[in-house]
Amino acid sequence: MALFGRTVVVCRKAVDLFTDYLEDALPSRDRARLEGHLAGCPRCAEHLRQMRTTIGALGQVGPDTPAPETCDELIALYQRWVADLALWLGDSKPVSDRVSDGRLIGCVAA
Ligand SMILES: [Zn+2]
Image 1: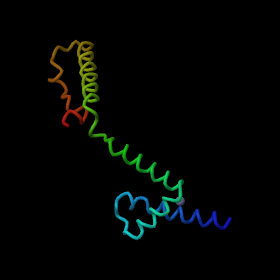
Image 2: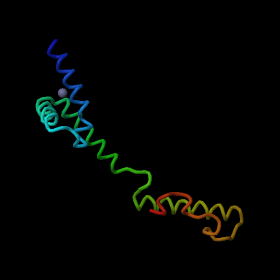
Image 3: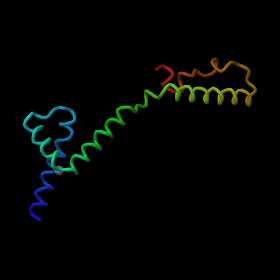
C-alpha cells in the first residue's frame, strides 16, 4: 500500500513535468529523471503518448485554415444559396454585386 501511494505521488510529479518536457523546457537533470520514470511506468508513458497525439491533432486544426476543398465546398454552397435567394426574390443582379463572398468565410482570403 505504501509503495502504491509513493508510486502515485511519483507519477503525479512526472505528469506535472509533461508540458515542460514536450516543450523541451526541462533542465537536463529533470529530463533524465522523467525519462527514467517513463521507461519503467507504462501508465505515464501512455499518458504522454496520448498528450503528444492530442497536441499533434490540434496543431493541424485551425479555424482560419480549412482545407482548400472545404473552402471550395463552402463557397459553392454559399453561391448556390445566394443564387436561389436571388431567384426567390426575383433579383437579377449578379451575386457579386449584392454580397461579397469574402465576407462569408475567412478561407476566401487565405
Ligand atoms: Zn508513472
